[in-house]
Image: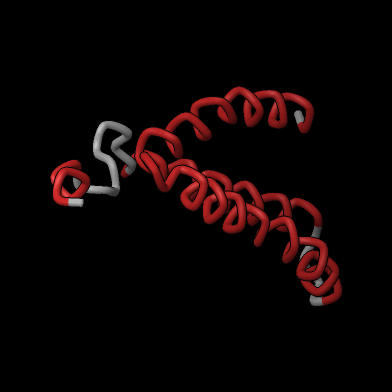
Amino acid sequence: MLCAAFFINDLAIPPIWAVAADIGGRYAGTVSGVMNMCGAVGAVLSPILIPVLRAQGFGWPTVFAMLATAWFVAALAWLRIDASEPIEDPEDRLRE
């Protein structure tokens, strides 16, 4: 199941970076960097928090349920992103 989850996650990577380029425009590097940093927060916190949760008596099924919930919340957040709407107003570019 873990391999299937990683496979499905990796299928989403190209569209994620494409959306960052689409909405970022000339700030695509900044959008990509912020997106990557936010994703890395979970990678940094999980090895710290999982032993704490386990020490508090949470079993592995509960820990995996928490991680899965965070993953699904992040997936739902992507439903709010409209790749056709750039963060930069095209008219601002004309004024420069």
